[in-house]
Image (spheres, rainbow, N blue to C red):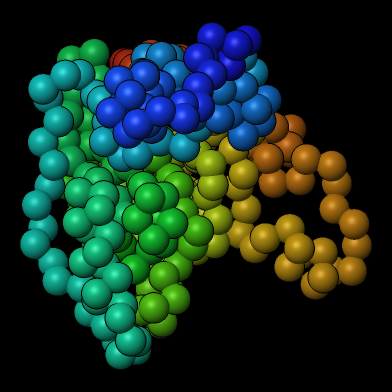
Length: 289
């Protein structure tokens, strides 16, 4: 096991200078524990393995930046810059301050990164939701970014891929956040009429209003292994219907078995799978360039 290779810390009773000279050489923050198999993993090796545990195959949650790096050809991604200000419709205390803190901490302006790039030289519009920013919740800006990206795909006659990761609508924006469900769904309908390919990729976790809108409307719906996907949480559903839920309920594997997901794709194979789907659609579209 990797854990056996970690040097044990040694206690010293000498002066502070001697402690400094003999302190452990283990870099702080260089190791991470797999939540599934409990193996201790070296972060750099984990990142090289697409943030997938080499011991058990557990898919760690990804930041939008790492996701873009894994999917899009190097140097080809250009992010859309919409310059939209966040509102505080419910006048909730510290909401704007919380957003500013998250922006400084994560380097993101909101819970989704959208832009245009290439997958093995094929142009695509890509949207990647990020659970590091308010659990990927969908408010006004997220809804507008998704809608803008869909409309851009129609304008440029390009396929669009959306990686979903969300806890649902953003409660701090009340009815405004719920309106984004209808808004994004209407945009997807326009996309469908235009004949563009839309691939929805469900990652862990995908819940709430995102699942109930654009995440479920893809021409092809892919999912990562063991991703949790649903609308309400299991406990809420159980209390509502008064019944025990099936084993594995709301996992990607359960949803694949019941026809909600078309295919489960491991992260190492995701880019190539998306590329093949784009080529298949392009080959069947007489207007494709």
